[in-house]
Amino acid sequence: MKGLSVVIFYFLISCNTSTFPKPTDLEEIPLDYLSFEALFFGNLDTSLEDIKAQFPFFFPIQTPDAVWLEKRSDSLQQLLFDATKSIPKNNLKPRIMRVLQYANYYFPEEKLPQTAISLLTDVDYSLRAVDAENMLLISIDTYLGIDHPLYEGIPVYIKNKLTLDHLEAEIIDALAPRFISAPSGRTFLDQMVHHGKRLLLHDYLAPEMEDHRHIQYTAAQWEWANTHEADVWRYFIDNEFLFSTDENLPFRFLLSSPYSKFYSYLDVDSPGRIGQWIGYQMLKKYQKRTGETLQEILAASPQEILKKSKYNP
Image (cartoon, rainbow, N blue to C red; front, side, top):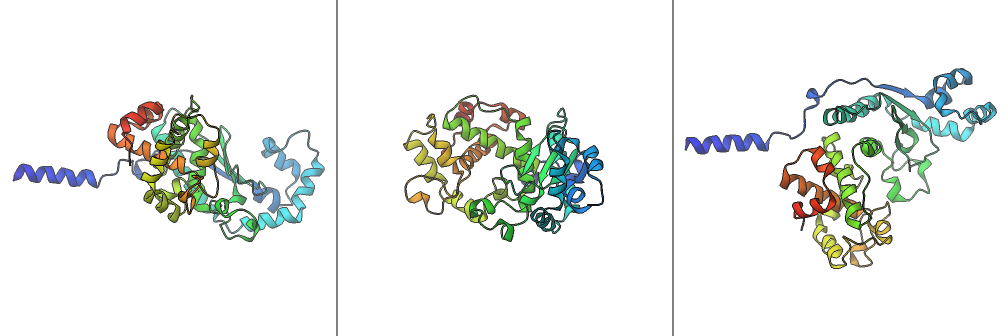
């Protein structure tokens, strides 16, 4: 009985011990947070020359000062700037820093950005966070919230992402090319696994985040994916998609869209990018079966991941 008690004791410990480091175990790292939009649009008494001296990389030499001066006082730009004032800026720096702390923990040899700069980009939701080597650029006007009136006319599947809840996901996606090599092959499997690795990276760099936020799904979309996982996988297998290089497959199952395109009953209520989600589940299954480190998983080939994960929901 004593031996059995010991086994049960250690089993309970293992079930309640996170595989990720605690925030208190993370190393302090330097990070400056600067609000360019507040300086450029909010402090109109600050001379343009002073701003250019502080942020020379934002001002191409071929653009005359008159363009920037007109932009500073433009009514639509000021309206956009006013909208960003509702965003709690004091909470942004610690959230950005936490992602970088986890990245530093797993990739200590990587020279990570030490400056984060927010700015307006005319709601360019294609670039919501940019890794610019020694700095992170945050398109602050793309985090105003799903129902913001300035987003009227933007498709719902895109508006669902335009919330501050997805800040960490955008930062991790921006940093991901530092840690994950581009796929060497052109098959659907190559691309699914690449996205799966990127999404698995989210688990490590933002472990407190809710599951559906890693892929920027709504809770209902995540539930649909879980419910239909086996159906989606069977559809991919029956149609021999895994090793196909059909250029239509990324548009149907990997790129951002209102729904995935099965051309069947599965289209109804399906989220876009379901191929990314399947790749994510395959990587998690591979991780569970092999027990490999994050670095080993990111280096594994798509064929190895498919074989060793034994993915078959």
